[in-house]
Picture (tube, rainbow, N blue to C red):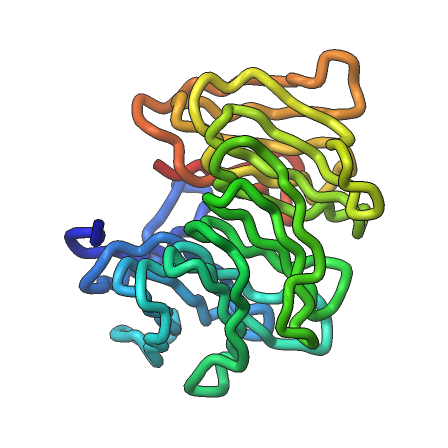
Length: 267
């Protein structure tokens, strides 16, 4: 099924007056994900339902600067590497492939194949250069190294589609997955036979999960059950808070790198 309609990239700023729209860009298909450049505060990359990636510059009134069209189905995830010394972007698509990009080059550097279902999430390791994770409808979490074309590690994470994954900011071996089975699971890459934690409480599919940038054991998740939940997997009762502000599916979530306790939700 192809996505219908147009997409809008809205760049917002929070100040004393509240949330202010700084810039808005339109695209001719739905936009599914966005990532900031790690070397230019004005540059962003989005991915869309037509399988393309778009590079935008907030300093320009029109855009995009570049469009990269290689995925054959919806491009659903995009992430800019956070490790020093490399400026690489990874995208994941419903065509079951992940692609590696250098934004300065007009074509992909490499295509990673192996998933047997839709790729919903591709996330760079914040610790290991050239290493990223992908979550898929084939029920697996996979770890990849850009220096080798094949998959490095396959984790049968859930008995349901895996919609989201994230790396712990304080432990290079720890990741979390969120799935259609309503559960969050933590995975230690040194021993993948069973999860190191399982968090239950959501009543519909978990759409996005993010580790805290300030606490090694705290994470947040959002779900099609309209809620956002905060967890501390080190505690006997791990659920810290449930936020029920939304009246529709909660599809996106991120945590501020600058202010403790500040987060954004998208629906």
